[in-house]
Length: 602
Image (cartoon, rainbow, N blue to C red; front, side):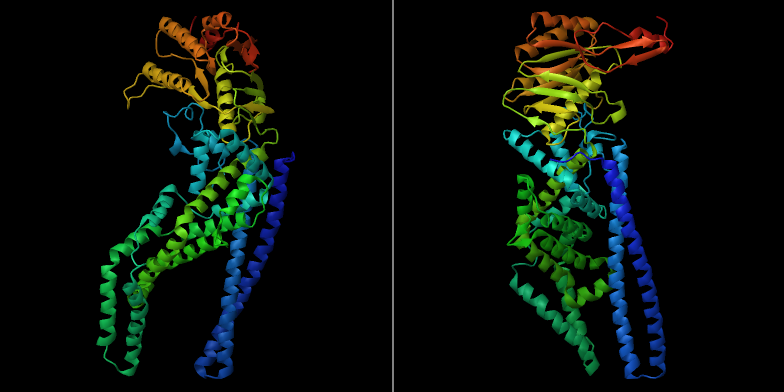
C-alpha cells in the first residue's frame, strides 16, 4: 500500500535533483566541445604539415587525432542524449506540480473518442478538452492512449471483479514506482506516435514475403553485388567500362522488377525507427523492473522470446528500419542500391525478423499500452493522496460512498457527499433549485463509477461497488444530421436504458431532467410511467428533477424509491448553496429570483 505523501514536495525534490544533473552534463558538454575544437585544430595543422612533406609520424598522428575526434563526438552525443532525457524528466515533474494544483496538462484530450451515442461518455465528459481522459492521460504512445480510452468506455465482462482487483493491485504498486513511470514517460516524449502510423506499421505483418523464401533471388542479391563491385574495381586494371555498366544495368532491371514490393514495404515501415527505439527503451525499463502484483508480473513475462528480451528484438528492427530509411538520402541511396541491392537486403532482413518475431510483437505493443494506461491511473493516485481504491464486491448490487467528490473539481471547491445503496431496486429521486448541485452529483457518481470499473482510484474516502453497467441520459440534444428532435433523441436514450435494464447484467442509471422536449402535462405523465417501470424492473439509479410531484411516488414505493435533495438560500443579495445532499424533498426554489436578476419582471 502506498504511503501518504505530499506529491508537490516529492516533485520539487526531483526537480532539484535532475537540475543538478543537467548542470553537470552541460559542464561535460562544454569540456568536450573544447576538446573537439583542439582536435580539429591539431588535425588541420597535421594536414598542412603532410601537404608540405609526407612523413610517417605526422600521418600516424593525424590518424590518431581522427580516431580521438570520432570518440569525442560519440561521447558528446551520448551526453547530449542524457541531458535531453534529464530535461524531459524535469519538465515532467514541473508539469505534475501544475496538475496537483488542478491544471490540465498538454496531453491528448481524446477528442477522437467522443461519441454522443455512447452509453455514458458524452454525458459524463469522459473525453474532450478538460475531460476525465484529459486529466488522467499520461500516455505518450498511441497504443497507450488506445488502451486508456478503451478502459474508460468499456466495462469488464463476466470476469469483472477479478480483472478490476488485479488492475487495482498493479495501479497501487506503480504509484510508488515513480522512477519507472517517469522514465518511460520521458522516453515517449521524444517520439511523434499516432494510431494511423502504428496501424500502418502493423500492416507489415500481413504482407506476403517479397524476398524471404525465394532462394534464387536471395542467392542473387548476395553474390551479384560482389561481381558488380569487382567490375568497378576492374576499371583500374584497364578493363572496358562496358563491363561494370552491364552489371549495374542488370541490377537496375532487378530493382525495377521488385520496385513495387519494395515501395509497399517501405511505405508501411518508413520513419518508424525512432518510435521503435523508444519502444525498445520502454520495454527494457519494464524488463529490468521487479514486480509484485500478478498483472505486472504477467506483462513482464510476455516481454521475452526464446529467453531474449523484447527490447533487443525491437531495437534490431529499429536498426533495420534506420538502414531502410537511407532512401531519404538520395545520393547515397542511388549509389548503394544500384551497386549493392540495398533495398532488397533491407527487405530480406526485415522479413527474416518478421518471420521470427512478427507473431508476438503485437503482445509487446499491448504490454506497453496496458502499462501506460495503468501508469496514468497510478499517477492520479499518487497526485491525490486523499483518494482511495474502491472495494469491489458482488454479486448482489451495492453502491456505497463516503465523502465522494467530482474528480475534476479543484480540492478547495470540491464539496463531498455520502450515499448508500446496499440492496437491489433503488431509485433515488433528487430534487433541488437551479445550480444547487443536482447534475454535478449525478456526474460525480457516474465518473467515479467509470474510474472504479476501469481499475483506477476514485475521489472518495471510501467507495464500495458491485460490478455493473452504467447508462446515462443527461446532455441530450437534437440532431440535424440524424433528423432527431430533442424529445425523440431523449426517448432513444431512455429506450437504451430500459433495454439494458431488461437484460441479464446489472445496470445503474443516471437520468437528469427527463422528457425536457415536450409539454409539462405529457412530461409529468411520462415521467411517472417511466419511474414505475423502473421500479417494476427492480432498477437501480438516480434521477434528478425539478418536478416535485414525482417525489410523491415514494409513499407507494418506500422500499424502492427514496427522496433526496439539494437546496440553496438567499442571503442579502447573494444566492448561496452548500451543495450537500440531504434526505427528503426540496422546499426551496430560486427560479423566479434568477429571472429577476437577469432583468425579467415577474
